[in-house]
Amino acid sequence: MAQRRVSVWQPFFLAGDSRTAVVDAARELESLGYSTIWSSAGFGSHVPARFREILDGTTDIGVATGIASIWHVPAADAAAFTDSATRDHPDRFLLGLGASHAAVVDGDSAKYRKPYSKMVEYIDALDAAGQTPEQRVLAALGPKMLKLARDRSAGAHPYFTTVEHTVAARAALGPDALLAPEVAVVLDDDPATARATARQYTTGYLALPNYTNNLRNYGWTDADFADGGSDRLVDALIPWGSIDDVTAGIETHYTAGADEVTIQVLNGGNVGEFPAEEFRALAGVLI
Image 1 (tube, helix red, strand yellow):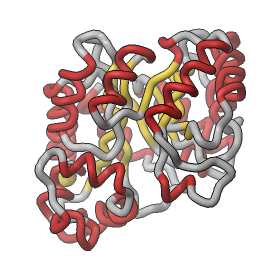
Image 2 (cartoon, one colour):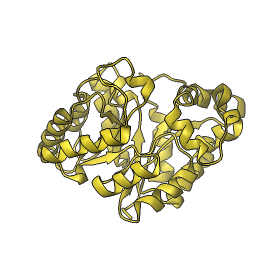
Image 3 (cartoon, helix red, strand yellow):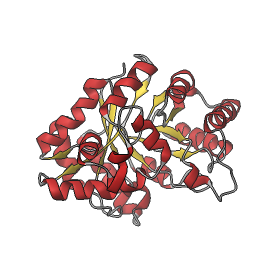
């Protein structure tokens, strides 16, 4: 298993309007000792230039797409971006790939069909372009995609999962592949307001069958998915409370087999504002 790392997953790094603010936030995370900055790659037809701006503006911290959609970003573009970023910033860029969701792909130029087969074709194209497995990671949830992540990439970056999935993912990946789950957190010890903030995040994801089907494999039901999620499901997905409560929840994923937890601080959906104070507090305990 790889050495434990603590990382950041925050939409701010793509959504932030100011390049200066984004790079300044990245530099602070670097100084605090975070390992990697993960952020959404959106649904455009290329890997956003913002990832390169963060690499150019920092010196050590890793940068990863979480994730680039294989239905939207052509494999040739993904390979070219990775090659350029790796050439100029060796060992600092990781291409996170995902099969996205039918609701996102429908109506686009691509048709959502056999996502596993599409991922295999995409990886074949990356290999043909000269990319190595170590340069990519898959947003794998189910057993087949986890096996593919083990065999043809550096590992898996599961999103919107519970600690039980982290246990199963480690078993599927074996001891050597990277396992870097995203874990969203709320630093608020009031149950009502903390869960309300959490549900601003969970509501959209619980409308996507890829996520709910995965959760069903671990015993969750339609009753848990209603109205933004039952209290029990919200609590299982999203550590909330004091700094000690939240870090204890994050630690359960390391105990379950994660090499790297990519922490997303939920701040009421305000993606244009970076929650610097929260990441400082988390670094003080976890790093």
